[in-house]
Every structure is written in structure tokens, then in C-alpha cells.
Image 1 (cartoon, helix red, strand yellow):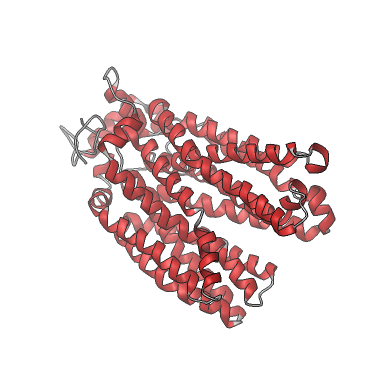
Image 2: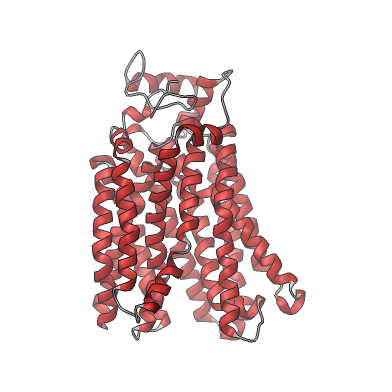
Length: 466
């Protein structure tokens, strides 16, 4: 990266070894270093994304099954469901704006306070959805308020994902950035898994009428409890090592705003990171949505299709930490490129297994898909963080990730469209998935120089210089 008002990682610390720099930092901030344990960082980074993806997955499930009847009482059930899903999509539109706002304050004021604010906003909005009266009591005010709350959730999400990634990577020892970065990815899959399991248990325990009248509210209220669990570790932790060091080095220096410097000096990294996000998120969104539709088209019941998603998400959760360990051992570039190629190939195998009618092939394919996706999800956090200097890292990661996620939100709809115009051909969705994987692979290759600096993880722990 070029030297400019955004600082760039040095290849070696001035005047001494990396260990020497770390000792000086420890002397200047003993309390900060004392709590820099794996457990505390895991609770912060994984906790933030667990809440985010719990709310994300829960809203999507309930919107497709319940919200049409509760908030959009139009004559056509299909129209009601489409309106409910449109309210789900509103959250994607708000995510880039949330990333811009959170990134600006995260780089100016610190990762910790912005993460706390994002978590509290997300949790409150989720709990309010759980107590929001339906159309029968509020009329059209009910769906309007639902959309407003979904917008607020989207804004909060814009600050959570990037913040969790940055907090994990910047809090890690130099040789374990891959592992600590994978914590945020583990939280994503864990949150989605929790949402599926909790809603599945509640829906199986209640009649359809009870589920639509009050049962759907329970998981949203549980989201409020998850907020408290997620915020407590942050309240007890300091800000990240890299941010504290960057503030100390630049105290008194006149610096431009992080967003202005980001767009001015790092447009290539920003654009390629957005493409990385499109490939990563688009692939998983299709796996989590269209594969369910395709399964039901091939004689699998809705519950069996959901069980397949649970197997997929459980496999990601179980394997993602291992992916982080291998990232530190072999480097993110190699693993991410290999995972991209495997994803593109295995997508065809997955849909063939769904079409086979074999339960062993069906659930086994979802498990393998989860294993492969764990390497994509586990490698990308530290890869994103390596592209931007500490003074603009929160902004760079949040803006690129959320912009890519917003674009990827259309991926399931595109997959459905291609499936329809192809005459419901088995190859339609995996072919589109191959295009997304190609975007991921190309961006990975074009970011190879940044990946090299990432692979040299000891150098990433050095003092940054102007």
C-alpha cells in the first residue's frame, strides 16, 4: 500500500524486532494487554455476529412463513408473502449506509463503542419486532413500523459485521490472526443455526394458529436476551491493540476523515473487497435459500429441506475454527483460492445429490458443502482486514463488506429466475453459483499482494508508519 495519510503496514518495526515493539506497547497499556485473551476476544467477535445472523436468519424465516398473514393481509397469500419478503430486503438496502456511519465513527472513536452501539440498536429493534401489534390492531401502521424496524436492523448490521471482523483480527497475536478472524465467521453460522433450531422447536410445539398469533414472537424476544449476552463481554474489554496504537502514534497529527482518505487512496482495495463480498455472500445466500426451493421441487418436504440447512450450518460452525488455524499455517490466499474452486465444482454435485432422492446423498452433500464454505468464511475476515490500514480499517471492511452483501441480496432471486427460464434445469443455479465463485476467485488473485503481507502475520503486528 502506498504511503499517504492512511498509514500502511511496515515490513519491519523501526529500531527493533516485533517482540520489542509488543513489549513497549505492553508497558504503555498493561490493562489492555492483560485482558487480551482468546476467550474474551471470542466472546466479543463471535457474540456480535451471532446476534446479527440470528436476527438475519430469523427475520427471513418468519417473513416467508408468518409475516404475510400478520402484517400484510391482502387477498392473495402469494402477494402477502412477497410483501413480507420485500420488508426483509429493505434491511439489505440499509446495510451499506450503516457500514459508512459505523466505519467513520469506528475509525475515529474506536471499535469498541461503535460495536456496543450497533449491538444495542440491533437487539432493541429485534425485541420491538417481537412486541409489534399486527395489522388487526394497528392497521397499515403495523407494516410501516415493521419496515422501519427492519431498516434500523439493517443500519445496525452495517456496523456489526465489519466491527466484529476488525475487533477479532486487531486483537490477535501476530501469528494467530487467522484464528481470531475466524471467530466472527463462527458467530455468523452459530447465529443462523440458533435461529433455525429455536424457530423449528417453537413451530413444532405449537399449532399453526398459535404460531401465527403469538408463537413467532418468542424467538424475537430471545434476541433481546442474546443482546445482553453479546454486550457484556464488550463492556469488560478494552479497545483493540491496533486502534490504541494508531491513536497514540497520530495524537496531535492532522488527519483527514477515514472515508475521504479511503476513497481517495484505496479505491482498488475497496472495489476488490466489495467483489470478494459479493462472491462470498452470494454463494452462501443461494445455499441458504434457493437450495430449499430446489429441494421441495424434488419431492423433499419443507422440514427435510430445513434439516438440510441445519446440517449445512452445523458443518460450517464445526469446521470454521480449523479453517482459521490453516489460514495461519498456509496463508489466506492459497486456502481461499482452493475453497473457491471447490465451491464452484461441488455446487453441481450438491444439486445432483438433492435430485437423487437418496437421504444419505442429500444430507451428506449439505455437510460437505458446509465444510467447503467454512474455509471461505474462515479465510475472508483476516483477508479483508489486511487490505486497509488501522486508521481506516473499520471503514474499509464495513463499507466493502456491506456493499457486497447488499448486491448479493439479489442472488437468490436471480437463481430463481434462471431456474424458471431454464425449465427448472438442475444446472441453472450451480451455473450461476459458478459465476459468483469466479468473481470470488478473480478478486482473490488480484488481491494477492495484500495476501502476501497477510501471510507474513508477524509483520502485521508492527508499528505502522506514515
